[in-house]
Amino acid sequence: MTEFENIVMGRSSIPSLAITVVLMIAIPVIFFLCWRGKHRGQTRIGYLIAGAVGFLVSARMLELGMHYFCILSDNPVSRFINGSTVAFVFYGTVMAGVFEECGRHIILKYIMKKDRTPENAVMYGIGHGGIEILSVILPSMILYLIIAILFSRGNVEEALNQLKITGDTAAAALPSVQAAAAFDYGMMAINVIERLLAMLLHIGLTVIVFCGVLSARKGYLPLAILLHMLMDTFAALFQRGVVPLWTVEVWGALWAAIIVFIAVRLYNRMKEQAMR
Image 1 (cartoon, rainbow, N blue to C red):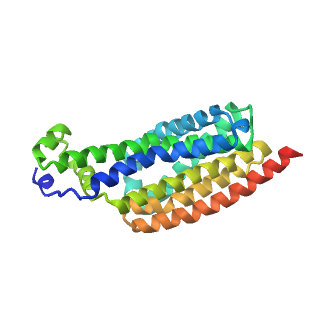
Image 2 (cartoon, rainbow, N blue to C red; image 1 turned 45 degrees about the vertical axis):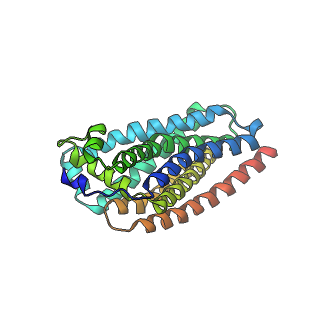
Image 3 (cartoon, helix red, strand yellow; image 1 turned 90 degrees about the vertical axis):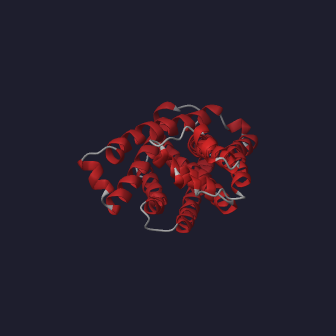
């Protein structure tokens, strides 16, 4: 497997990946501890758990099941979506928005009927965004760190054996090894900033959906879906190779700021109404 022999592990790969792993754990923990410490009397751990379960069910089970049919399987639908950038971006953003926001709406409206406080809406968002980091991002970072450590020892054949990479799995494993080798402090910063923005996104969207549940106004759920779609647009374009990575981060920061601005206004309005 000469393609692996030509890979040179970057000098900063191991320390930058190790720090990233620590920060991926720290981000949701700090969000939780800070919010819980400030609003202990108004928050319930059940909302944190509900947010985590909501993400796993809506995004990791139902949405991935849809992706298996529409993206990964070989059928007329998947061939059409994969063959068109417009269709791919539209499909990806719609599915992310619909599954995650409808999941929030269903759980907050029909399951979490007690202790409906704005503070608990934020707690739900922390659970949703936190479990995304711990179940999706963190395992990838740990895998990259293991790869970097094994390949840094200089024995490629031994590294491949320990990673169970054979001729049949080499093509699928090569991108992960290349990603680990190229990971540096710049990529660390990008990943951390991206996760912070995602946490703010999930908290903000939860507050918007929660406001719709409390007020019984139907417009808040479509608004949350639309905002989620807009947030994910450049990420989908990046997957198709249309835009560079830096534009994804700038676009994400813009919409995260807009979503947080809307959510803060709604949060304060709900607090004022609760005090009357």
